[in-house]
Image (cartoon, rainbow, N blue to C red; front, side, top):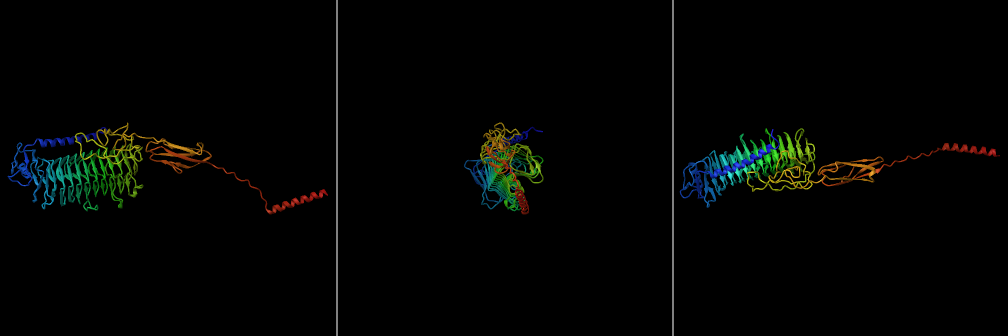
Length: 637
């Protein structure tokens, strides 16, 4: 059993070491070269006039100089280097069948601020670079664009049987197009590593196609890079990147931006199969996201941001504005032997489904396996189906010091229409503590869970510091939401993983003011409250009693006031902060005034009945009186 926080620290260390290893390998690959050839011609032929790129590549393949090329380095061998003369800035490959640049040597570095392209007006289909070696092809500073292939082995920009290593490079506007089974619009390789690079505007088309930007069966690692606006058209999975097919597969995205990628299904309209993972599709191995932003990706299947069959670990990241037609606006988390982990991260404005059918579940997350969430924020997510933020479809949900609020669920089964978390079948109990969850159905939240509005600020760039071993990223910081003044989340959270920093990284402490805030971002704004409830009893304090529990009220929490009349009086109702016969005050963020009105009980006295006579009784009385009068008269005479 590991101590709390061990797994997180180990994950962060792996990420930091991963970048350090990447930079070290790249530097060593460039500096420890053998043969060196300088390209001094922009044409695409091998001749005696100058050294073209094609001639330089042929020289490295053959370990023998071709055309007018010269070797200014050592003997041909592993780690050979091709560079460019300053006058060479762009090379357009000739429009000829199969005119890809074929690199057969195992390890080669091509370095220079140069565009290498297939003209988009070419009538022949071919890749830009095909690496048939099983080592590492390093492209440093290059822009690879315009490739077009119909080959099932794919990779219109770059294809490699080994590893493609991008350093300050760009792979853009490449298209792989075939009837079925195509993979990798921009890059198809056993492994791909990229630092300070961009993979953008690439496409893969065809039934079951995957990996619009990158397709790989091994390790894919992006550091300080962007994966943007790539697309799978009428295909399978992974508009931005597909990783899988091997037990050693792994995806790491560190201090990077992943945005605007798209995965269409087989129909292209949401009525067919596939179309999962708008940005990322990971079918095997661990997926790690650290200090990155996944924004504005969409899927006509499941998982607008990420579709993952195996374990996902997300740290210090932001997932916002992602959309999935069938469910899991940001994440579709599948079955795995180990639980998914989310820490110090923000999920905002993700959505699932279409309003007209009330279908599409889990605005932020559709989960079918155990998920543990710590110190994170879910806000303003939306589902046309069930679970505005989270659809709990199986496994154990554990949540600590996390905000889930302001979600919208349109399916009538949600009841109120503002449900944050929904358990799809049966009931479940959530583990954890110190959360703020406004509403949940079919799932029991931990005791003491707050339900008030968290009063969050807008999604903003609040600054960040890259993890150890990383250079400063030029693509911006993962955005977050700062608790505003009076937020009930302030100083109400916990830090079970002993995290040193919040979502923003080093320099942004996880705990300020003695106790962590709930959510991904810690604020230095002082907490406020508790708030007093002032009660006035009318007409005088002696007519009744009113108690409010609790009073004072912790900021953002609720209280209930109860009125009891003294003998001889009756309670008439509340006015002020409460109106009517009952008084429940929710989301108390300021002092409140309540008036309780009583009145005396009026006791009515019954009226005394006056005897009455009927006419016969009256006649008898008069007759008797008349006889009495006559007798008196006779006595007088």
